[in-house]
Image (cartoon, rainbow, N blue to C red):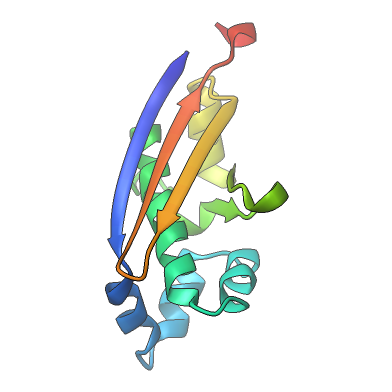
Length: 131
């Protein structure tokens, strides 16, 4: 059973502009986990990867129904490249607690990006075993 769906769209140029600022490291460290930073930084166009992961984080909190509130921050939602580059989401701290309280045990994410825009959709489910 689907518990929540979230979708988000992020401008890659906006992320590229932020990454070019003197204070970019503060933004990156506040929003992304060390693993995500490493994944994005090793690519040819890191701004596209950061934008995609940021869109996925926004979509995830929409699917949770909380937004970035209740003690949930962006770095509690980790977007991994997963097997064969298929992204997945790992929740921690309050994000994980909220998901568990709603019986969410499966999260599906899809991310797409071009040189201009990044989008993500997240679907959170309870499997039939937990209905």
